[in-house]
Amino acid sequence: MLACAFSGCASVRQFASDVDSGPPVLIVKSTPARAYAAGVDYLQRGDYDAARREWDRCLAMAAPDSPARLDCLVARERLESPGAYEP
Image (cartoon, rainbow, N blue to C red; front, side):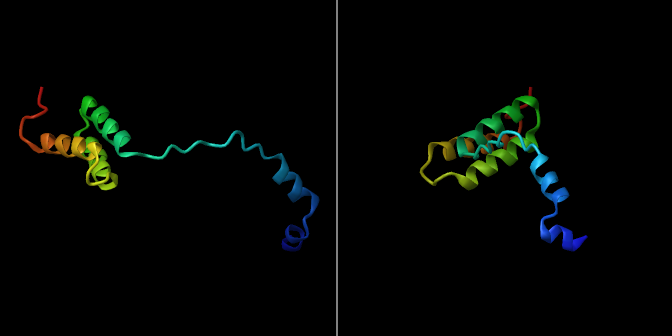
């Protein structure tokens, strides 16, 4: 059977050509602004841990002088202050 796979037998070629992979999947690259927005979404849902993770990701990938970094830093600090987001 191994020899058949290496020799390019018809059944292997047919399997490979019948596979419909569909359209290519678009992978959206994350940006600090998207991580900040995702953190806000999680915060609105009440998932504070996920919001913290997103804002940490934002801080990790943002440039030191980026406005998005400042937004994430302020949001992260407000999240840590007691009672800041309590209803």
